[in-house]
Length: 278
Image (cartoon, rainbow, N blue to C red; front, top):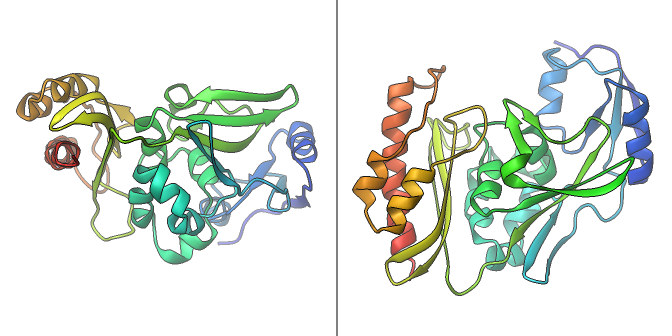
């Protein structure tokens, strides 16, 4: 299929992009376009205007400042995958990157696009939740910061207003006590995960604290498993698996019962990663 007709504008600044989407209620932002192009061609999206933000300087910056890693919205997945800064200071994101789709997609897809699209089976939203990160956005009233726990509000829905642009994500830089774990199960490498788990904690020996478990593919957004987190902080993996209270739905990949079982399998694998990372 071909997309419905639309107008195209290339924004040269954040203010211009905000003005364009603010003046056109059904405008869509174009970054990497790896999800948008598919929805346009299938006519699941039919905007009157596409606002291309690829010409805006500074939105592909990767930096460490004051104990925080900032990753610009236009950072390509492949750029993040190769980044020594991310590998050293945000290792959970580095570990998740090779699981995102395929190399051709990672060459064009953007970090900001993945976060803003908010696919519940995607890796990066779960990583952002697991790390207790935040999202910086810019709109007519200026810049604001939204905690990751508050950003994802439903199926493909976020706290991002229609006239705002996501500018960067922020996560705490790893320290000597940082532990991370990541695993997913997919039918083929690069497919969306049937179930996945991103995790972060602080550790000393096999003891864990500040555990954050973010499952993906099991709900309408990344899902924190808070009871399981508490059990892992007590050092009881069996209790953590038993405490999982996820409520996935059947989908084309697996039944809800299969997803709950696989979530437990992944929790055991990731808990081992966290405890053995001394």
